[in-house]
Structure formats: C-alpha cells, structure tokens
Length: 248
Image 1 (cartoon, helix red, strand yellow):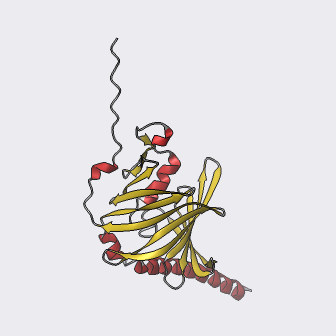
Image 2 (cartoon, one colour):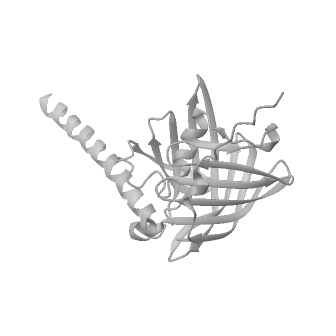
C-alpha cells in the first residue's frame, strides 16, 4: 500500500513538473518564432498604419508605441479624429462622437486593457515579473489547425487562453475572459497573415475580434516601422484650459 501511495505521489509530482516544463518550452519556442528575444527587446518604438473594419465601414488608423508602455491610437471616423492613448500609467481618450473634443480619462476596464496592449513585448516575455502566471492546458484545434493551448492569468481580472500553431509556434487565437463589475466579458481574437518586419520580427497583419459568432472588428495593417523617432509628449493627456469667465 505504501509503495502504491509513493508511486502515485511521484506521478503527481512528475505531472506537475511536466506541465510547467511544457509551458516554459512553449513560450520559448513562441519567442524564437517571433524573431528571438534579442530582436524583440531591440525594438524601442513602433508605428503602424492600416484600416479598422467594423459594421461594414472602414476606418483608417495610425498607432504609435514606445517603451516603456506608451501607446497612442488615432482613428478617423466619418471625418472626425478619435484618440485613445496610454501614458505608461493611465489611459485617456478623445471621442468627438460623444459630443466633446476634450480628452477624458479612461475607465478601469479600458485602463487594464490598454496597459496590456501598450506592452511592446507582449504578456509572455518576463511574465513572472509582471505578476502573471501561466498554465499549459494541452492540445486543441482552431478552425482545423492543431494548436497548443496555454492559459495566462494576469491576476487583474483578465485571463487569456492562447493557442499556438503546432507547426510554427505563433499565436493564431487568443480568448480573453474579463471579470468586471460582476459581469463576465468574453472575446476571441484571431491572428493571421504573419509577415516579417524590420530586422526579422514576425507579427500578424490581420487581427479579427469576435464575440460569440459575431465579428466585432478587424484590423488590417498596411505598414509597420520599428525604431522610428516619436515625440513622447503625444502620449500625455492634453491639459484643457478652463473656459474664460464671462464678463458681465
């Protein structure tokens, strides 16, 4: 009986070690597939242009990113300029369709989302230092493609299931589960049309987001440049001068 118990304990421990090794190996292969850690960390800034497709309409956009954790997205909607930005600590937005040209601070949910998007390395590189945990789930399929599934918990009420193509080790799908104000928000993001940029960085040029069976939006990149000069001040929320007091 003692031998059986000891054998069972060894199997449990081995399973735990195997799972941890699988997760680590999978992340290492993914980083290598994207160009390697040295090349990824050598990218200090990035600009990207393209079109966002939503509700049957097409909106041109320009995105700028810069270390550490700075991001700005400018989208032209029906002749009006919309801005969403993250200054490294908090996000802000300008939405003229809401009836104002004044910048407004982002809410809690948007801040969490933009903080992750502004991370130029992505969530997997140095994930432990960021306070995240990962778990290897196993093998699965994404629209007929064999994949490895990895679960990343940010401990910020956001959990992501990441699906890696078994042949190329690139993430082709990402499922996010967000707990917010006693509600659960789920979405799936599909990545495709991977292209080489700059000095060998591989990234998707087509990104489609779905909620259930409905496509919410699709982003198609047309041009990406690395290590371009960017004025850091564009990420800071503009100061709105108080309106001059009316003279009586």
